[in-house]
Amino acid sequence: MCCSTRKTCVLGLFLLCASAVASSNKQALIVTTFTTAKAVKLPNGYLSLMMRNIVDQLNRTKYFSDVHLEQAGVSEAEKHKLVLSGEVTAFHAGNRAVRYLSGGP
Image 1 (tube, rainbow, N blue to C red):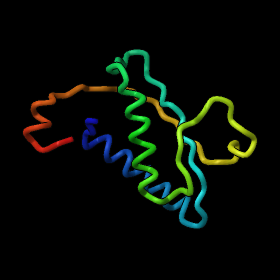
Image 2: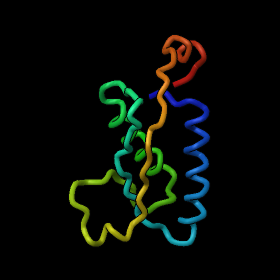
Image 3: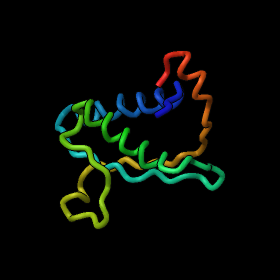
Image 4: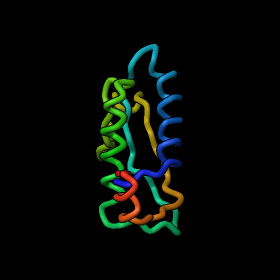
């Protein structure tokens, strides 16, 4: 999956803030499926791949006791967990050949 420097910085900033919150006691994190702005057109399957990638990266940080995607029907116990939501406001497909030649993902 392509990740631009800007996206990496935003995610890094989120993780920095999350580490301060989660440092005292680890809580579970529920990641909701991000919404997309009306003008944004994502390739088929891109949003689900991006959501799985976010969950995988957050699990590797060890800042949270558990990170998983939101399932339909949230239980009463899960209402007290941290929730990550977001919106994709812009998407630029970029150039796969340039990413390959520059050593990018």
